[in-house]
Length: 120
Picture 1 (cartoon, helix red, strand yellow):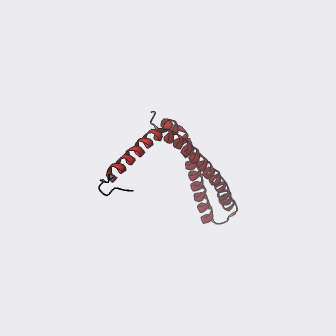
Picture 2 (cartoon, one colour):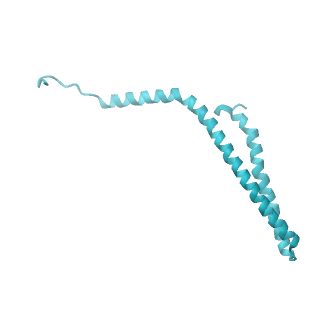
């Protein structure tokens, strides 16, 4: 039974919240370098997979649209259609080259950021 004359000890909520915040911050600070390295590797793997899928789809789309443009260019009797087909063929080739060139650029630049840090 509680004695009515006994003083109750009050818990300072601010101190408890500060201690919880400090503990959480220290825990995150100790775990963060390991997580950052793992997250960097996982992000790199995901980006490479997505890029490979984009290149695959864009290559198929470029081949199909380029073949249509070439067919129109070769079998059309209208000079306007031939000119438009030639312009579309140039756009398709330039876009496909840029998409594939991004992979080369990323393969060249990625080693500079190995481990999430600049290694230049």
